[in-house]
Image (tube, rainbow, N blue to C red; front, side, top):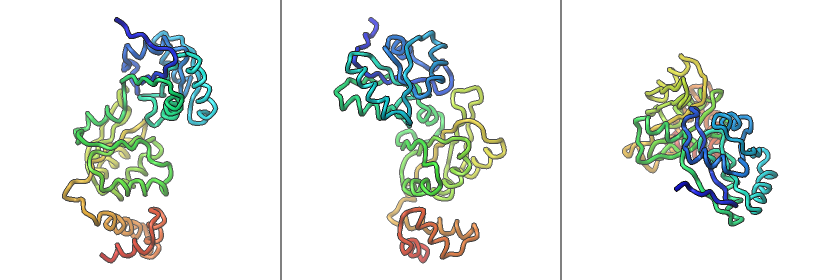
Length: 280
């Protein structure tokens, strides 16, 4: 017997990450039966709805209007309406303001029901050939180098595969920073997953960067980087990372003093700690 969707409930509906056929029958029926669909980009979501002959009303809900639209959606739910939340691609609430709507709903004692479906990070992971028993999903790194580098340093000693999302205009800089901070580790770069030009670059971070630059940078990317091996982990990891970053800055033409100051500022640590690391 077909599931009876409940009124006054928030349903989290995953959408295709590229190929429109990657959607479940359950999700299609949920979108049809909802009173409204909360969508990041209504124009983008409308294309999906048209493909499946779905005529449910759309409500714009994104990062820049969530404070206003979130409470309005909660009011709809409290009045007995069924609301389906979708992301532009993949799972709502993953790198998506849907997570804020979930918290609002739970705070208001509104039932939240997740539907399974497509996710770019896991799709890339299972085809990568890398460790799938332990992994860390990071998603998008901060947009600026100043804020990215401390995050990468904090991940340097992590075990398991690291999973990142990245846009084409930042991918080259991010791969370079990963090589400098994490070391030239095994990497798989996935481009345009599930789409016509789906592609995988495999090798070390430096090799993958070279392959990408030779081909040209287009599309959306998932980056998978190997975690640190057990034999590489030790209590002095941070110290060795400081020293390596200082050497990288010196190679760019800075004096040692300037390099220490820059690295300390980037990582939010004292210049003395960075200086001591260069003496070891």
